[in-house]
Amino acid sequence: MKALVVFYSKTGLTKEVAVHISEELNCDIEEIFDVKSRKGILGYIRSVIESAFKKMPEIKKTEINPEEYDVVIMGTPVWAENMASPIRTYLFNNNEKMDKVAFFCTMLGSGNKRAFLEMERVSESEPLACLALTSKEIKQEKHIKKVKEFINKIKKNYKKS
Ligand SMILES: Cc1cc2nc3c(=O)[nH]c(=O)nc-3n(C[C@H](O)[C@H](O)[C@H](O)COP(=O)(O)O)c2cc1C
Image (cartoon, rainbow, N blue to C red):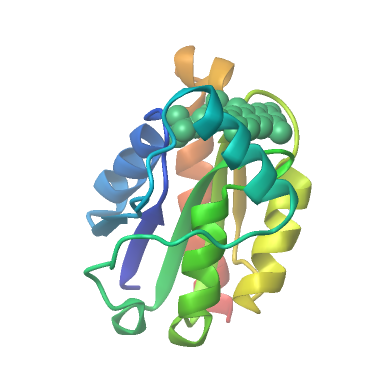
């Protein structure tokens, strides 16, 4: 199974998990970058509005072609009980290039279910597995076991598919 991890991260937590997953799988990884800065309170407000109203902000051109992978593992922070808006842009632009998908998110505590449902809808693909982690779990390193289980589930469901 050739896997690719694609993620967006504003403050580094989703990146930490994405790097961890790519190291466990020994696979390629691609970070999504904003074109317009999200710094400060205005950046925060814009992020909430974009996510709540399902906007698709411009993102920097990505390097890796997801078509070359069996599974694309998408990682997002939860924003306004939804996926982060730059992830929506990526999924919309690349959904025809992705075969199988799996999703993970980081959050303070709520919104993962809606985020995953929306990611499934925009990618037009049912995920092999989903993993939601709270910032508290990550700080306490409780995510390590959950990441292992997530990877095992992806591999198992990939074989079945
Ligand atoms: C604009 C914005 C909206 C957010 N909305 C939510 C939310 O609805 N639910 C939640 O649990 N956390 C929410 N958070 C917290 C982030 O999901 C959480 O801190 C996440 O782990 C950050 O990931 P990152 O460090 O990769 O950017 C929000 C954070 C931001 C910046």
